[in-house]
Image (tube, rainbow, N blue to C red; front, top):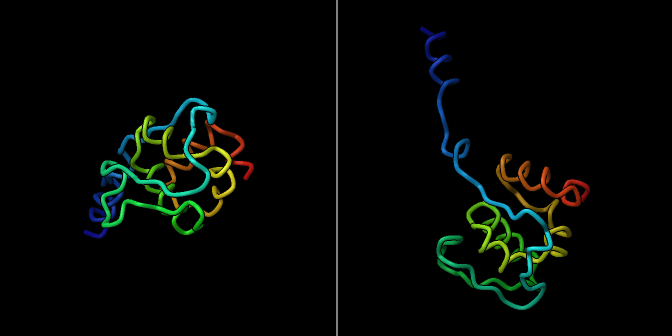
Length: 112
């Protein structure tokens, strides 16, 4: 009985394991602001406040995490700033597949 339960649990598929994630082909495609305020579109962030202050590190972390997890390449290009992304990369809490996708594609992030 215990063995069957273990087998069923190990075959379980989680949405996080199959959800498609997006990333540009080059960091140079990112041209988001490095300071000021940024408003995230609803498809990226559906929380109560969509307006983030890029001069506040906790706002940057929250906005960038949402953009990396939920944004399409078009969203990422207009929101993310490459220099800011590299500088806060170690602070971001991301799904393993998102981190692997971005670090495999952009060695500068893995080095950060």
